Structures are given as C-alpha cells and as structure tokens.
Length: 69
Image (cartoon, rainbow, N blue to C red):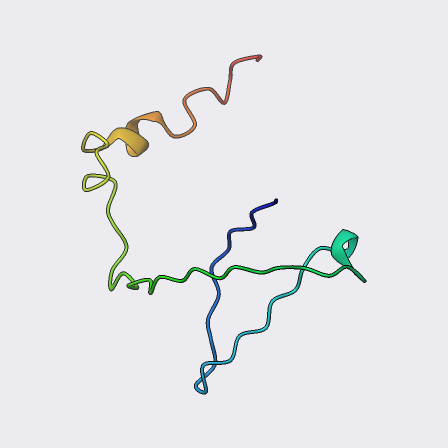
C-alpha cells in the first residue's frame, strides 16, 4: 500500500481529476479517498507570528556573503 498526499481543488460540480504515477498504469487499484476542506489563509503570517525574533531576517540576511564556506 502506498500513500500519496497532495492539495488540489475540485471544480464547481465537485469533480476531481487525479493523475497517478506511471508505475501504476494498467493495474487494478483499490482507492480510498479521505478529504478535508482546507481553510485558505486570508493574509500571510509575518515572521513575528511564526515565532522569529523581531528584525531577525534584516540582521542576518547576507551575513555570510564574504565567508568561504
């Protein structure tokens, strides 16, 4: 048994097209579909809301530009 997880959108009639990997072509399959509606975020989360310290990216962006890694 293999699991494929992805996000997609059904059309206005509730139809959904699923493209499976080529290695399952010409095989008899048993498909179990479990779905959950995804609530779209109305606004992007800021770095502060994601737990980063205020100004972190401004202070660290490009800080290793002169270093030989």
